[in-house]
Amino acid sequence: MSIEVNNESGVEVDAEAIVRLARFVFERLWLHPQTELSILLVDEEAMERLHLELMDEPGPTDVLSVPMDELTPGVPGRPTPQGMLGDIAVCPQVAREQAARGGHSVDDEMLLLTTHGILHLLGFDHAEPEDREEMFGLQRELLTEFLGRPAPSETVA
Image 1 (tube, rainbow, N blue to C red):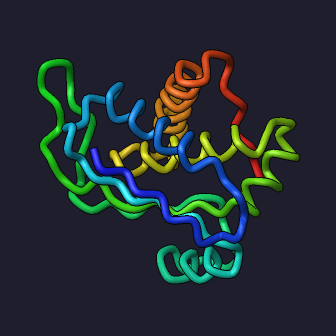
Image 2 (image 1 turned 45 degrees about the vertical axis):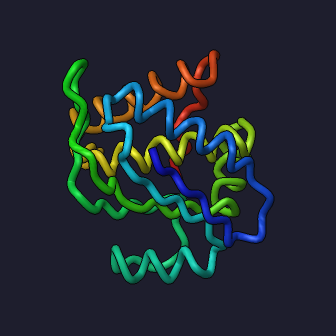
């Protein structure tokens, strides 16, 4: 597993916890052991540029996912093929605001956003109600198991 975290945000973040979480999600969703993931932590200005470039939407957002090899979860005994899962960009400053609104820690919000980003890379989406229920349910299940306690609720902007 190659999981790289590059912190360009100017905010101190527990990168080791993010890597542990990503490894946990990879194992639970049966991704090939040599799957690659890049996580970039950026400030609000950089996130706003990425948001405009990738989604044509103004303002910074919390997390963006850019899939590479269009991998999907594997199954027990048959992991997903080896490949580059993709890139996730997370903005700790936006995460801090959302954590305050959600009543949980910034660390929990960063883990929630990382899980969310990985699920997007694996093809999950939340545009339709049934897709939202599936994605957010899996997100809560994975994060609850990783944390050993109930996962924080998603913060709605």
